[in-house]
Image (cartoon, rainbow, N blue to C red; front, side, top):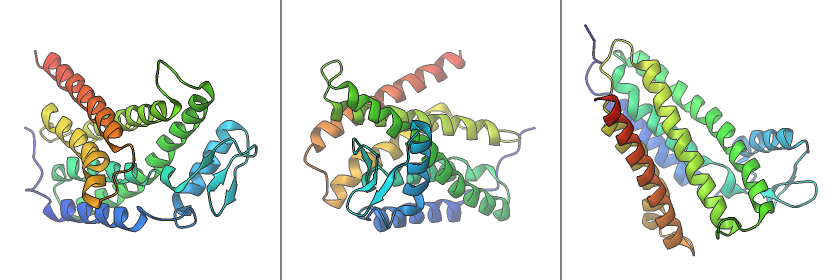
Length: 234
């Protein structure tokens, strides 16, 4: 007999959303020094993978020895950390039976989201540096390839995170539907990358291009996810 979690964890969900809002508000316009808590480990990991030591420049961020690239505040990955935390808490807190277990899950989700962000963002930056050196690819500019890379990597990482947490917490509870998983991951990603810039009044100069590319890739991921679930249920 499968056992369900004890009701809806409104407190866990509510505090996760408040934390997401607080992180977004506090660090959306932060300087490189303000973001040292996440940029320092990321810069060190990038430098280790590339065999070089990045140095801090107050006006730019963490700069490569030859000056060919730098890790700016916009590259910190705070938005992805917010998404990882949100998916972890909103997607799985309801499977835990006690307030203590939910609190432990919440804290573990926060720590895990931080570590996961540093790892994923490190890979994204290393790959982006190489893409820029290639120049235009398949008719796409380096900037467009950078956006494509970030969207595919971040979405893939979020779906991988959801799948791993689903298996981790599935013992003794009803598994979530593929549709619910798709809506949660795709919805939070589109909300953060497409809706939030509009709501805050800072969409950016190339917002239309950004929104079209991100929305298309997200819908393709969602369609693939739903098709896979349909095949599994046959």
